[in-house]
Image (cartoon, rainbow, N blue to C red; front, top):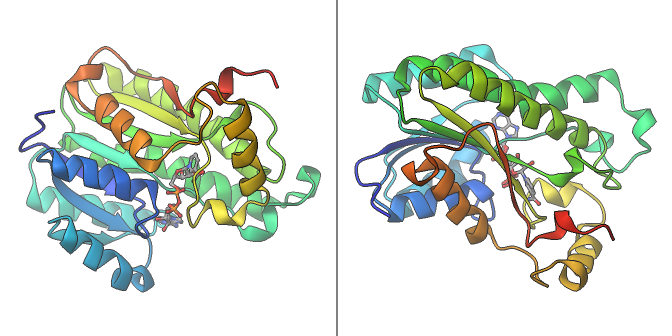
Amino acid sequence: MNMNGKKALILGLANKHSIAYAIAKALAENGVEIILSYASPALAKRVLPIADELGIKDCIQCDVSKDYDIQNLLRLVKGKWDSLDYLVHSVAFAPSNELNIPFHETSRHGFLTALDISVFSLIATLREAEPLLHSGSSAITLSYYGSQKVVPNYGVMGIAKAALEASVRYLAHSLGEKGIRVNAISAGPLRTLSSSAIGGIAQLQRRIEKTAPLARNIEPEDVAKSALYLLSDLASGVTGETLYVDAGINIMAY
Ligand SMILES: NC(=O)c1ccc[n+]([C@@H]2O[C@H](COP(=O)([O-])OP(=O)(O)OC[C@H]3O[C@@H](n4cnc5c(N)ncnc54)[C@H](O)[C@@H]3O)[C@@H](O)[C@H]2O)c1
């Protein structure tokens, strides 16, 4: 795909297992210029060498729970570029003691934290990025099927993902007038830092191998290829959607 010279801001690369890594790699291979944003100073030693390997020069630390950090991130992006073609939001968090518990034991703090970092951050980032976005710009975020059906141990993250998918629809509407598209990819389970906090992933993946239409689990590259589609002009008429990249498991009743 010719994406030469396009400009992308990617949030959520923590290591080489991150879904954001697969997307960054695919975009870089297709000629996209990238600015990476990572959560904390402690992550720099891991993220900077990866950026280097991908030929990415600019990495900016941004804790999305802080308004100042998001404003600062977009201020620095505006200092480098006068427009932004693609925004990739691959960020989620819930305190680990809020997962793998009976859902009714969710705390107010856990609920607000999960929704703040995993959902509001998309709205806040797009709001700050808006002056750089133009007709044809496209944003994606990452969701999971726990938004639609109960997935044991996923708890408050399921509610966050339901709110994320609804936010995608509202953002698609409010930014649609400017020709800006916003979509979500609902990815099947992958072994990453985030998913390691959720009990039972290995069993879930074994079940998917047996019951998914494609009889396999997905690879990060499956997500990256669909991300390229949604970000690029190939999806010029698609907005507000949640695209399942899950080997088809979501269509199965059992
Ligand atoms: N791994 C899976 O099975 C799976 C499936 C479907 C959807 N997803 C979603 O994909 C996205 C990426 O997750 P991943 O699996 O690649 O794991 P990951 O841990 O590699 O990525 C999550 C990212 O969120 C970042 N983050 C957390 N708190 C932050 C904060 N306060 N400020 C800025 N960044 C913060 C982390 O630093 C990390 O880079 C998440 O939205 C996740 O819910 C993952």
